[in-house]
Structure formats: C-alpha cells, structure tokens
Length: 275
Image (spheres, one colour):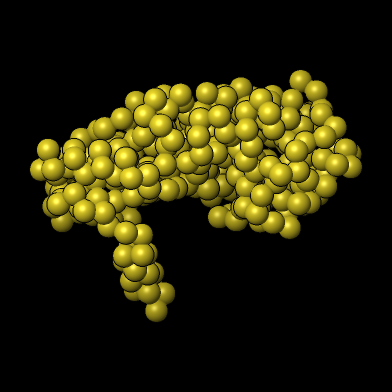
C-alpha cells in the first residue's frame, strides 16, 4: 500500500467521511486516511485506537489498510472486527483509550463506504476536525512509527454492560429486521439474552444487500417488517442499518412508531435521570 497525494475533498463531510468504492475510495486511499488519522491522534498525544467495521464487501480490505496506515503512523490498534458504531464507542471506555474508528457508510447503498472517527469518549470528529484531517492529507506530512495491532472480541462485555442497565417486565415477542447487515448478528442476541422471544428476518449478513439499500426507514423495509409482525402476532419489531445506529420501530398492529414519539420516550428517561 502507498500514500496517495490527493483524495476527493467531497468525502470529508460534516460528521464523517463517505465515498463511492473504486471512485473515491480504495485500499491506498484508506491507508492514506489511516496515516492522516494517526497524525491527528499524535498531535493530541493519543497513542492507541480501536477499529471496527460493518459488513460491506470492502469492509475487511479497507479495515486492514486503515490499520496498516495507523500502525505506520505510530498508533497501536485494537481490531474489534465486525461491529456496530455503539460498540466502537463502548470500546473507548472498555479499553480506556480515546481513538476509535468505525468503517461504515451507514444506510448508504452497497457501493459506498466511509469512516466515523473518534477524538475522545463518546466524542467523534465534527466539521472543523474533519477539515483538519483533510488538510493533513493535502500537506502530506505524516507521523511515523511502528504501531502494533491486536484483535479483541468485546461484544460479550458490551452485551453485559447493556443488560445490567434494565430488566423487562414481560417476555416480549420481537421481530428483528436486519436488512442483511451486521445488526442482524448483534441485536437478536441482545434481545434473547434480555429474555425476549426473537424472530429473525434478513439477519444473515450479506454485503451485496440483495434486498436493496440497507435503510430501515425505507417504506419497503417497514412494509415487510409490519407484515411479519402481524403474521407472527409479535408485540413489536425493529429494523436497523449496517452500523446499528439507525432504527425504525413498528408496533403490534403493523403501525410505524415515528421517531419524534421515540425521542419523546427517550427524553422522558433522560429527564428522570437528569431533571
């Protein structure tokens, strides 16, 4: 792998990096971005980073390239493999390190990929920091070193941490629509261990996304989830995107519970904790 001199500036967005595979992104671009992120972290005296990825077809290749870039830039890495964004955020607390990387293009089509980059605990890059990363690439002066890489599976620790925070008063019957993403690996396990009966739908990961764009807010996704809920006489259903941070909810009648109602429920919980 080699450093590339120019990268399409349009992939540097407000809260993440996202581009088209083989047009904006390839292994050399990801290696270069790894070198740039290593430089960014080194400027802040951060020496370690975790890294996870979704199940896109380019995910494993891009992850290896980005890790190599960070290692060559002097950053030690912990590869947590197939993951979700929230598990990557959790990894910072678990390992007590501020660097974190999620290789994902969220709910975008299969020919996209991208990066979410951490700068602290539950703190990801925003516009100013992402533009600084772009400037590092443009200047082309990178930190150097001999970082190491190791692999760790932290899903069990994440699941334990989640499950200790609540208990269910009944055994819910749940449909999980995985949209053929990594979310279909993790969420059914969490729900089952919480005591739910889980019906899995499209939970086998397939980075070609044979059913279309992995966006849980798409009407066709909601329709097939609602249909299965009524068939199974389930209590509720959830659909997720590739990195698990976008969700749709359908009730027992097949009706969509819109996000403003869900946010209101979350707000009630937050206000109970922080009045």
